[in-house]
Length: 85
View 1 (tube, helix red, strand yellow):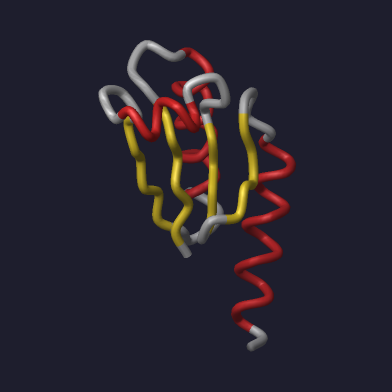
View 2 (cartoon, one colour):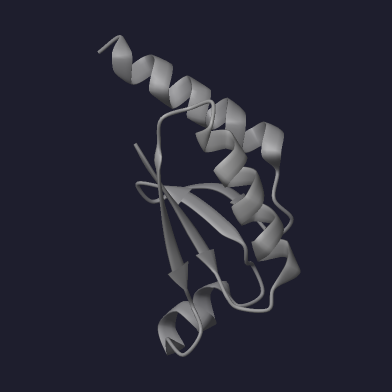
């Protein structure tokens, strides 16, 4: 399972989201892909006022202020359901 974090430098909300995701990795096995939107016109247009944004396979999990409960529930549910498939 891979979660993607869209972020940019000097973004305190992005740093908070990164720390929370790294803590979550201690309890759940997932990979974290970080994408810096800085300098990418398409990504800046799409996410500049929405970051941090957390996605899994194109599914929006969290945007703006990081929602740790929502992300943990998503990760827990996704990992559990994939084991039962």
